[in-house]
Length: 621
Image (cartoon, rainbow, N blue to C red; front, side, top):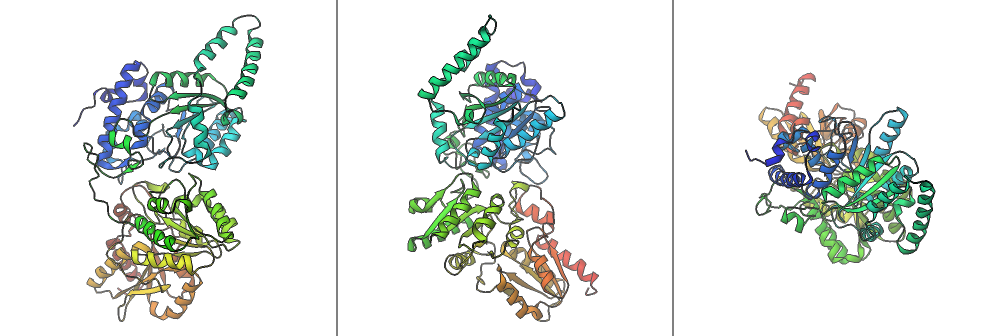
């Protein structure tokens, strides 16, 4: 087992209290080495965790995370916090089924105040905890650690505006690395750039105030100086957005200068009001490959820690194929635009952003704005294609309803990471999109199972639909089934004469379903397989025309929740017995996709066993 020096002696944050700053610096180096070693074995979020090491150590040193509430926005930069709060020995299980979560999770430790996984909510949650502390007459500090990328999300400003005028003692730490996942964009980034070069005079200001307070009339003199300083500052420096919101602004400070960060945190703790501490960090710090390309090393699979090379060869996936197909369509049609929310590489739009720069729009972590902006484009004759992860589209539900669907506008939603995603867990598994989109009148949902179907459905979505249309596809590549039945709302892909059981599925689940059918045939159960390609009025017509073909026991297999899924729809539209194997009405744990298939009984063996059990119940076995 590799040794990590002083890190081996740290069993809890209490062990940090008596250490010198030089010793803490040695600890930070050991933490970086441990993180690189661990993540190279398990995969995970690398660059963000390397960048926050000193800040996280300072927070654990100056606060008591078992009592104080420290909330890491998004949560993918919480590895140091986990290591220092007693979970280092379990890091070999990071993001694996039954192991440590890659995000904060209260089930793991009292030091994790809430679950995190999506951006821009930390200040809201922190303010709620601060209000609870006041109303219950309790004493603890509340800290929200939010990145400049998460500050591109509108929810953060709603919270900051409310928190700044609340009077609640609350510390917001702005971890400013000029990145979200990709390079930050927009006016906020420029504002923070100006703040980074403003004078560092806070320490002197505090010392002068303390001395003036000890002399007669000192308080009045301090107030007079503050008013004069504010007037001069207003002329000479851009007014801080955060001060206008009601925060006392501290910084900016070098986030890798442990002593300075600890001193400012200590000062912030004494202030009985909303405070924002601006900390500048370098994403990927301490590991050359990550420093040189922090976007590439944001979320990683296993890699060679010496060379930085990823061990698994990159295979073409649905995201990349989507990006290539969209480029091809846009080459021939100047109306087509692409919109994403801080995820150009994750959604496969990097090449589009280069080839069609004037028609590519990265709005930052602002999905609501992305969808409403797309509505405006569509209303004026463009064809906007909005590429978002399934769980991120959840945040724009109102805009899909209010700005797009009610007017019947032609917006194409390309929903990446649909279905079971895996290692990121409950916050990222896209098991809800069919349910919430089906609830919106006029939305057509297309479910490709192969690259060929994705291509056909993209052409249809752009040129043959008039209203809102969504194409949902999984993370990763296509499976063994690579046909194209996209012209049929309901297609029979495995016909069996005299079948006893019909398996119905959609999307990538066709592969496990076909494998299950083979297993059932080997056990003497004649099984056919049908595939739903779209959820639209055309599907109802297709079912009415083929209902006789779906006679007998019908089992729907889908990697989504029960409520609002295809199984629920089919059960309400046919007279025969319809059962469903799905993720269930629950949130799934983290683990590999195959682990979660087994967990839900959605692997070929699980599907076959489900059918055999229910076949006996119906008297067929």
